[in-house]
Amino acid sequence: MVDGRHMSNPTHDEPQPVRGQKAFRFDRHKQQIQRQGRARIVLAHDWLVGRRGGEAVLERIAAYVRQYHTAVALLTLFDRGVSIGEHTDQVRRIAAGKSRLPLAGPARKWMLPLFPGMVSDLSGWAASLHEEEPIHLLISTSSGLIKNIRAPESVPHLCYCHSPARWLWEQGEEYRRGQGGQVRGLGLALFGERLRQFDRSGTRGVNVFIANSNHTRGLIERVYSRDAAVIPPPVRTEFFTPDATVVREDFWLVVSALEPYKRVELAIEAAAKARQRLIIAGEGSMQGWLRAHARQMVKRHAGGVKGLVEFVGRVGDEQLLSLYRRARVLIFPQIEDFGITAVEAQACGCPVVARNQGGSLDTVISGKTGVFFDRPEPEAIIDAVRVLPNHPKHCRINAEKFSEKLFDQRMGMQIEQLL
Image (tube, rainbow, N blue to C red; front, side, top):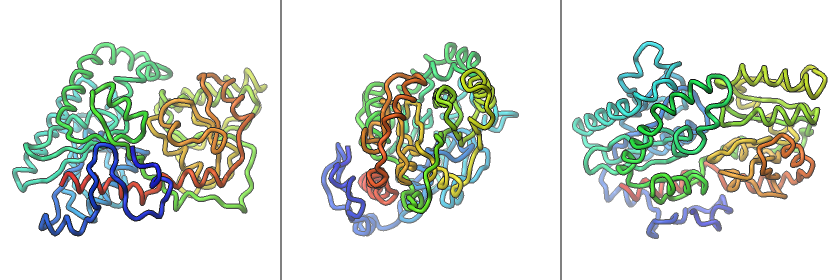
């Protein structure tokens, strides 16, 4: 785990070794002189179909690589051609061959049995790139199976792991909920064990694991029998800031992909039972089901009052900043590997009500920056909101531990050591 003394000091210039590293001076310029040239680095990411927390991490790593080295290519299972960020968009993208099948984009979740072959295809691409001109490092960022990609012989593989594939290892039941849940459940029943065997064996090729939280570090140890250093994801604390002139309003906020494991239905049920206004920002495969569920819950518990639960879809940065600054509380009902939105909210002085499991244990300070609830029930959320602390300065100080600058330092240390 990163030395806590320096996590709490964003102005510290040099990062400290994380667990498993030898102490050394982080002198990038000196190391580059010794290497006599910029290293050639290949990136890999599960799929490029939108920008969420995982893509924000990829963008930050791509920025580091492009500044100090050469980003040769970005390998991915699926590429919808969407913009990920200024730096990622400048890297050559290579998608697995089967991703070009008709309807492969929208149907990717039904192509699970093909994933091992697609990863093998990308391993072949990595080997070809190495033959053209030697590469020095493979960096994968993964919450799925892309970490099973094989690096060319003698090329180290660094994996930033958001989580072992949730649908395989930890939250299969959550993926059986809601719209399409029965089909997803059937697919996991038929192919889950084969994919788990593939995932276990494939990770033997990873030289160094980085986990985004202590929760994920524990999962990596349990699932793969491997240790991992902990480097939290970068949070844009210089953009997400408090504003004392903005008045807090009496509404709850959810900022989330609308997917089964996010448990947004718990926040909806709690808001309906408490007759509390709730704004939900985000999109996803559960959007239609959640809208219908919200109408049903509001009708049952709040007399069908209009506007109690409002879906605003995917919002831009400025609107999101405004929501964080105005919301009374961010509701965070899922078991998350890390949860960038919880830190973004705190950076704006907004407290968090979070599930007492997962990455929230790293990001929320109970009684100071938020409240935990234990039972995945709407009543537990309502009870937690009743004892919510109001310490915006504590929220801001806590969020600064997860700044982009600190992420760059910690990841830079790992990259340079492997090179």
